[in-house]
Length: 443
Ligand SMILES: Cc1cc2nc3c(=O)[nH]c(=O)nc-3n(C[C@H](O)[C@H](O)[C@H](O)COP(=O)(O)OP(=O)(O)OC[C@H]3O[C@@H](n4cnc5c(N)ncnc54)[C@H](O)[C@@H]3O)c2cc1C
Image (cartoon, rainbow, N blue to C red; front, side, top):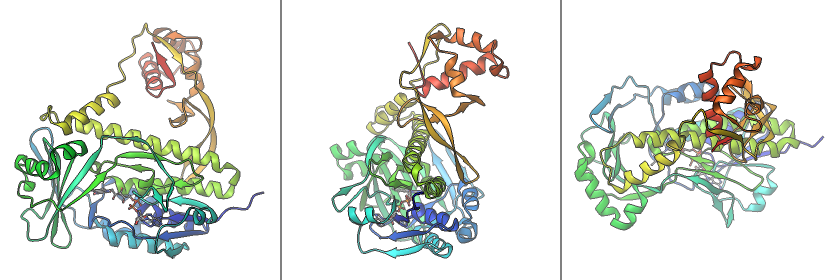
């Protein structure tokens, strides 16, 4: 039997540190390489679902003080009237420097070895370090070595930023406000400072100039960003899914970067660590399965990105006041493409099973562990489905074998004992879902 490889994690942000903690807690030898290459934001917010995840990962005690921090009132102007959620909405703020340090300490206490680095690793170092995980956030290459490529991305976006140092009025509230040029984010941060971010369209900023876009957006704001000072910082916001052709694993933002509108980046970095810890624990015990586990994680990252893209674009589509503005035109077009493609299948239209359907080795995630199972996939990056509605995927596909109309398939199911618990509408819905996922096509 092959010896388990040591695991080296590059990047000590939330994804890398939580992964190191989880692996070390399973008594797996792990080295966490820390290198501060990027300045993180002073403060970010955590969505309420993070509390449950933090507990489940066993990080509750380490992160207690952050989870209990006093939440802000949350104001939103999106598509119409202002709405306010009071501070009972448990959306804690975390000072990123302190948050990241506590996670690193938790990993080290659990047995991970921390290595402070002066710079990024060479390709050779990564190769020699055993099983490598790139948890490097937005860094996608180091020392001429590119380890990820963009597989899919939403509309190019930039964040224009101004920090307000003096006392800045609304300090008990975070505010999100849609304007023709994009959306404003007002976020008071800990050291008496407030961050004003304009999330704008990259192409519009390139043609009109940042100063012009910033000033127009400020004049359109009815909330606190109306008084924003001059913009003094900018960064690209890449809502994207990245994959790798190297024999490394990717974690957190290195694999899937979310739109800041969702405030879910840290939560998803922790969720990615949980999933990857299970995959690496399996790979540690069964090194011969590593390529299957990489395939499994690629599909997981792609699934996360697609689910996130659908949710985010639906939110952008809900703001209909600024139809002709470039920011909204681009996002509404993307929403139409991603959300609007699935026209209802007519009962008389013929359905066909995709020619690319194949069986793949997949895994089921149960209570922190992966167990192998066989599933159907329609392509390399789409979901691997073992079942749908409790019925094996191949049974659903058998309903369509040889080409059937939706009405024929529903009739066939009504006579088949496997589908006894499914209503005709339920059968039609599941076949519609298989069509959306590319397992079936309708003419
Ligand atoms: C404008 C903006 C606002 C945001 N607001 C929120 C918010 O309110 N709430 C939220 O949940 N999320 C927010 N996010 C997203 C969140 O910051 C990220 O999703 C999260 O930090 C991802 O964690 P990570 O560990 O994957 O990456 P990172 O936090 O980027 O950590 C990666 C770490 O790896 C280090 N590194 C890079 N290369 C190497 C190397 N070769 N070797 C060693 N170390 C390396 C980097 O220095 C960094 O410390 C926001 C993002 C942006 C851009």
